[in-house]
Length: 121
Image 1: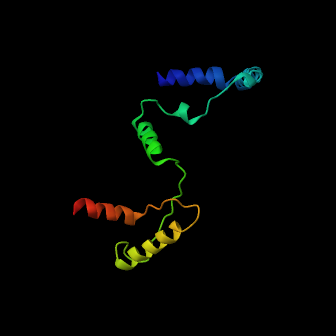
Image 2: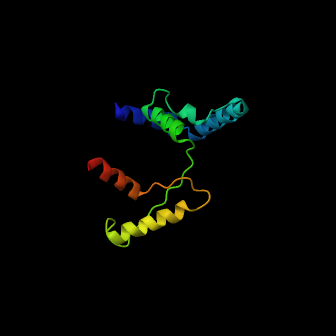
Image 3: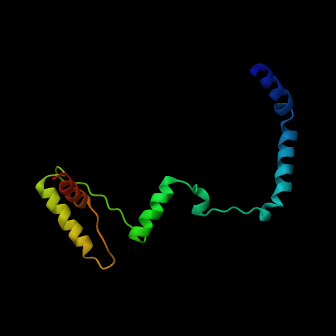
């Protein structure tokens, strides 16, 4: 079957390559006249299914917490991340960022740790 396809391809396409390229260019040129009639909707709503669980969670979180403008800052510790020095350094950094005028809220690993400690104690 594959051998027959290769023979057919060689006979029709490769032996008449100039004719095939000309045919493809003619089709492309004729279709290019209608390109102004093509309209694509590229909104975020068209890319997501309406019954998507992630979309439902996003809408819930956005309604509860407001705007979804945020900035993620990564932190590379100098020592063990959970050492006292690193945790205090991270706390100072979080406090300094919180003091900036345009910052409403800072969520750091310290917030998560505090939540976990309260949850399990």
